[in-house]
Every structure is written in C-alpha cells, then in structure tokens.
Length: 432
Image (cartoon, rainbow, N blue to C red):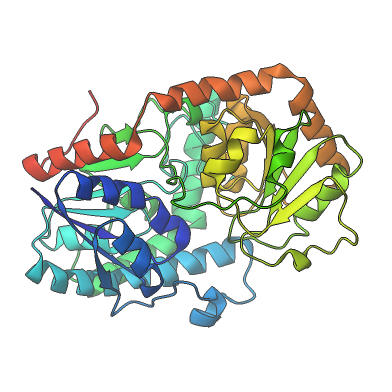
C-alpha cells in the first residue's frame, strides 16, 4: 500500500478530473488524502479519500472570483489572464506549500498528485518533499517546435517555415507577453529561498516525474519534442449517476428526430452567448433540442414562448443523455468535448476565452466538427453548422474513430498503475 496526497485548486474543473484517479487508487488499496477547498469536501469523501481543508491560501470554492480577488474585476483578455496567473495561482502556491508542509509531517506521502495550476506541488518537491505527478485539466499547455503557444488558436505546423513561426511565437509569449509573469513567479520563489525558474512559468507546470494527459494522441497535436514523462491515458470521464430520475419528456429522445444538445458548461452560463442563438437557429427544424443551463434557472433564457422542439433542464448527466445525441453545440469546454467524443458525437464549437480557441481548432484538426471561431455565433452560423454535421457522414465517422480509440483506454486504471510505479521507484516514469 502506498500513500498519495492530492492537491487541487478549489475550482470545479480542476477538482473533477482528479476524482476518477482518487477513487481508483482507493479501490486498489492505497491511502489517499486530498487537500482542496471546503466546497468539495463531500466530493472528496465520496471518492473514499480523506478530506483536508485549505487553511492558508484563499479558498474560493463556489465563490465569485471578483469578490475573492477584487483586483480581477473589470479586467479582460491578456490583463485578466496575467492577473489570474499571478494572484490566483502563483500567490496561492505559497499558501499551498505551507499547508502541505504541515500535512506531510502527519502523512508522509509517497507521491504528491496535483493538476497543472497547483503551483505548490513543485515548491514542495524542491523543498525536499516527495516526487510529484501532474494530471491535465485541458489540452497540453507546453511549448513545442511543432506548435504555436496555447492561447493563440493556431493550428500546428511542423514544416520548416512553420517551425520558424512556432519558435518566434513561443519566444514572444514567454519572453515578451508573459515575461512579467515569470518575473513575478521568480520574486515569489526568491522569498521562499528557491532559485529562479530555468525557463518560463508555463514550463514549470509539467512534473519532471509524470504527467497524465487525459486524452489520446487522436485528439492532441503531434509534438516531436514531447517530454518523455507525458503519458496519454484516455479521457477522465464522469461516473454514471447513482440515481437518475429522467424528466417527464425523456421519451421524446426515442423518436426518429435528430437530437442536438447545447450546453455552456457550469462557468460561462450566460444563455445569450450560445444557448439562445441555438434555440433560435433550430426553432423551425425537425430536430429535438436539449439545452442545459449549467445550474441556472430556465427563466434566464429570455425566449417567450420557448420553441416547441426545445427541452430545457438545469443539469442532465451526460452519461445518460449522450447516447441519444447526434450533435453537441458547445463553447468548447474540454470536458464536454471529451465526453462527446467518447460517445462518437460530432461537435459545433463556439468559444474564445481561456484555451477554448485551441480546443475548437483541435475539433477542426481532428475532423470531428466545426469551429465557428467566435464566442457569439449568429443563429444562421449555428444552423448551417448543425445541418452540415447531420448531413455529412464524415464528421460522425471521425468522431466514432476517436470514440474507438478512447475505448482502448481506462484512464483511472492506467493513471493508478503509473502512479504506483512512481511511488515504488521515486524515479521519472517515461513512455515506452
């Protein structure tokens, strides 16, 4: 039996990806402690892990980030992203380090497992702590000679000219646009008596021991210089619900009409971005449209009356819904895209914030859908894309090919086996 300590930023997308790994480690007889925000205590305990609260860093679980971090309010684009890197992630890393240092006195973990935004993991290791592994919460973030840096929404290019482009853009991002982030990180490190980073802040996100990427190479750009400790383990998918009471209209899914599901996830929930344009786009089509609001009341959808072919719920488990779905309309959230592909469902993507432009481009690159390259698509754009996916079989065929590739993997088990190897050897775990 080994001892594993998990650390996660207290935000839903960062916590959920670790749940299947934690549960599998517990099932395999290991002792798992999990350090995160108080809003996720029940989630942690349902995996069979021991919950540990955040004491020193800000616990912003289930809170408005603009309230916890007032300096964030009103910022957009690059300024917002850099503020978050400095004050949500880097500053929190100091508190994470202090808390975990105290935890390790009681629980001398063999391995520390964190997601890439958990800055305290590398600090703990550099201060003499256990080896650490990282797991992905989205696409690969690392610079490569074959790809442009994340955030630009550019397709890969490994031609000689493309590599020149990539080298220039990677330099521009690390040494110009985000140089102040790395400088800030090094100031924080100096206060902890640590040397400056050898490269950029972004490169510090990869553990030198093990990085678990929650997809397969079928949905990730090829990199000739991919670090050897990166392992593609297949998607981290949510569990089937223990109890599911279907809504009264559920039998409508079992007709011959195509089913389109539109969702914006649980963060960007303004229905006017994507849900309302989709409902308008398909109002007069012989299609059943199922919309989920991410927890907000259906009344936020300002369409009166709702089209007769629309069904709206706050939340529906994708495990139950996706087998009926023919097309997903999404703002390119990584988890929703992975779930759709695991069911062979093609995707219409419309998202530009965070890394969503890059996820949308992977949808185009993999041939599994259409990227509208906007956060605010028109009804006509959505309708044209949906009808194209419904009537051109190549998109469905490509999505089903990735579905078959995903089915070869069991992400929780593969992750657990690699983590067990790391706990035993305390050495980097490289791909075969």
